[in-house]
Image (cartoon, rainbow, N blue to C red):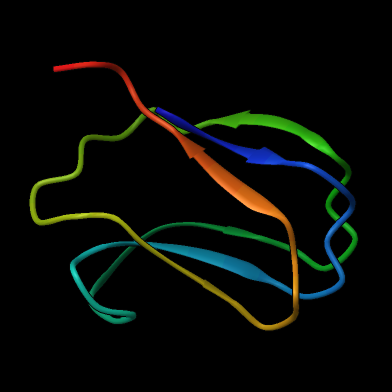
Length: 65
């Protein structure tokens, strides 16, 4: 599981273990995070929600079931 940034971020990217933008925070990628793949060494118990503070290009990469 990981996050693929297609371009440098212009805002923050917050990843939650939840079905809404609240609850347990898995990670926060800062403003100006460079494009690339960011692996998340975490298990999602509830779900995965990503909240951005700008129009960033973010892709979630998961493993098949």
